[in-house]
Length: 350
Ligand code: COI
Image 1 (cartoon, rainbow, N blue to C red):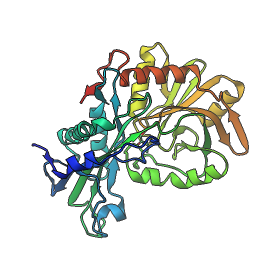
Image 2 (image 1 turned 90 degrees about the horizontal axis):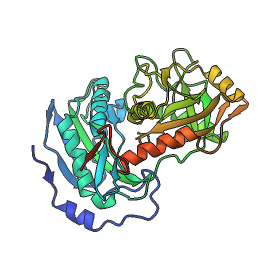
Image 3 (image 1 turned 30 degrees about the vertical axis):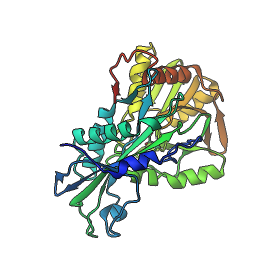
């Protein structure tokens, strides 16, 4: 199906000025992509000016959180081109999230139309500095106005974009969250849904008052093994091997996580996807056999962890990025920003 381009798009783009300071997700591109689904039938996609949405106050999404989203990036490559990183993995994950919340998956071709069209029209908004990118945020929500607890019959899919810096720049102080849980086995932890993030906000507010940056979530079933951070996956370098929690149904299957595992193995590191016991991890940090820890995600890339706080204790890691985090970050960015051969076939030029 062809994409409808609203005639007002050209004027929105012409009048747009990219601010000097980007931050993360605060500056919005002036256009967005939209498609609607009624009773299982998708409309054609349209590119329209970025504007507030009009929603019925009884829309299901506002009451029963029937919505999911993705985070992905378009990169300026060394030759001046623009490429997306593994967009088909985001399309597949969004389909999984949608199915978990009883929503119709966005067809992969429509998802690709959305991210490609927004990126192509916002080509001038893809920053060229290393570590910066056009952050793309596809999302899907149930819009039917009806307060019954049942799946919506109507949905809207959008792609918005934001020229951005990396989300966290490093030296994060984590708080081991032993009270609340982010997601349970059988729940929605492995789906990218807003409710998981909402469930993490109270913990983040509490730990900020104590001088920390992010929660380190434990598995809700055993309260003993590490799951992930609120919007990032966790890695530790222990006895020179890379450890990351094995996917267990309550951890989001990060595309950066998956790519780093592949990249690290290719670079010769031993990578273990396994249960990481929190007390064992803290003991390893204390005796120095956990040499580094870092978090990763699309928005954050790789963000080193300098402290694990638990109870009254601070377990200190190196405050500078460790050599493994540094090497992996550079190797990943070198592929994404086109400085090295894309030997995994991850990049898709736009
Ligand atoms: C991402 O890394 O793209 C995320 O979705 C994490 C976050 C900013 C919510």
